[in-house]
Image (cartoon, chains in turn blue, red):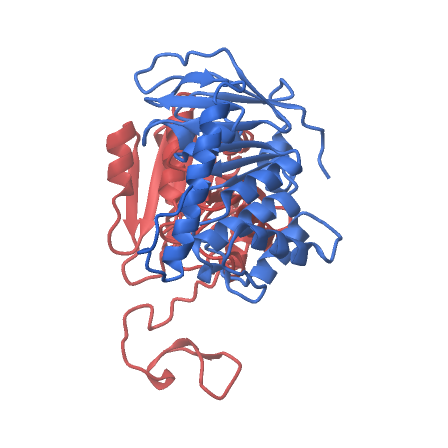
Length: 260
Length: 235
């Protein structure tokens, strides 16, 4: 199916909003890489992953160029989404396709020329590992909640597109089990780039790209130095999740203050 | 001179795509623009003010805008030729989804919005099937999976059409459209240009503003409730 094996994706610098060149030589992404993109709202985080998604070739506002295996990717990889090694899950939590979940997945499986008949059911099952609100095949795509939509699209990216590179734009805002998503993507050896404001997700990445004024400002490689704070944030996050579930379940939190 | 004919439903982004073409190709070609619309249009004034290119419009009024477009096209080619244009861009009103204004000796481009619904390509099948290029706009608003599903729908009606996905405001992906435009041959025999298909261009009495209901009051191509066949009646 895929015309060539992807070993690396390389981002070459563009320019900031003030026209100055970005302060990096190149960013190289390999299979299994977990890279977070952080920065204030409007700093260019989404534009950064969009550049990767469209294989920018100095033709976007940022002026960046994206290489595949060190070269300009072939036209067919750029133009035919079914041959594209990248799946982007956007901030939009609404699907516009006027189809049921089953019809939508079947059509995508057909577009990918996958002969597997069970793929649709597998994809729905995987999506249900990412969300607490059960997704069923006969539901309409347009009626899915934000969490369900994102869960389904991530599962689709893994199980149907089999894209080796997954781009996630603020995945945490959709009300999904973010650790399950990251664990599943890691297990499948995906290269993952995610825009996030979530401290836990940011610290789960191996590299952190910091954005400012439309440009990459710095690239942090903690290499274990954030291990202690990560353990603490993980506890806090677990605590918050448990409290969130209790509030959702309609409980009054008037008892003992639970420990972390 | 090259002839580019644009069709597509309202709000699909036809003008946004045309703006990118002018922005990217005005250095290589002198570009002239014609907009066809029904009662009001502003594209000619906007493009002329923004890029300083010759631009004009035709209002079809009570007549089918696509019919009007075909009637004035030969004049428009002479107009643009006299100006020394290297490219003439004609933008349809985009009202009739059955219309296929593409001609021979031109590049036919249909502009579709990715947010228009999964079935929209099926609803405007002839407009897509007779085009050379289908530009799918607003792809930044949908997911990867939706893009592929939309593309599959376009392929159902037009297996060979060249599909180009873009966010036309940013211009992403349009380098492939520019490539296609550069490769379009010039018009060689303007008097031999004909329509590629048979658009439903019947100018009936309702189109011309006669408001009475019931076929008994009309002329031209008529339909009755009980007959599946069209009825023809002259005045």
